[in-house]
View 1 (cartoon, rainbow, N blue to C red):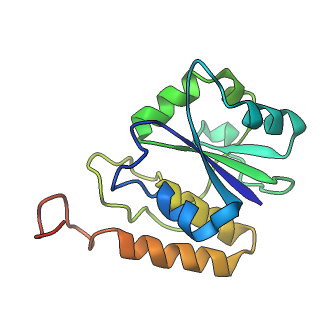
View 2 (cartoon, helix red, strand yellow):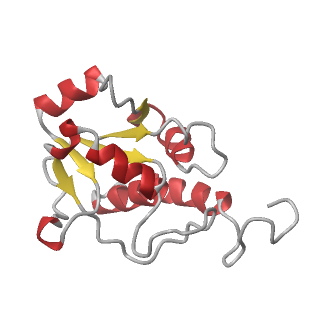
Length: 164
């Protein structure tokens, strides 16, 4: 199983980006591909054409497929929800890919940014859900442990605690 983080350039190097945790914990099973509107990633296009690729992206209720069978590669748009929506709209190749909508076991605990969408997960949480739902529990636990150490204590926003 492979995870491709299609990353908005503004996210690369951001301290609040959880995609970096996915890359660190999963190693070669995860990759970061910088999104470029004018130059779609050739290798990703080839992988999509070959099949077995799914885009993890929220959709209308009739599109909510939680069936993960037959998927070898998951593409996750790694950016803010505003950036992700724009990337999806401006990338025709993503609109043709099988779309998977996750049904999280609980609400997001990601708290490093304001204005988070309710019922939506950050990148690391998406990967944790997929790993759990595909029986890769040890990897999910390792990533969750790193993720929980990465975020701030519940209810703490920017500047509320020294050093945060």
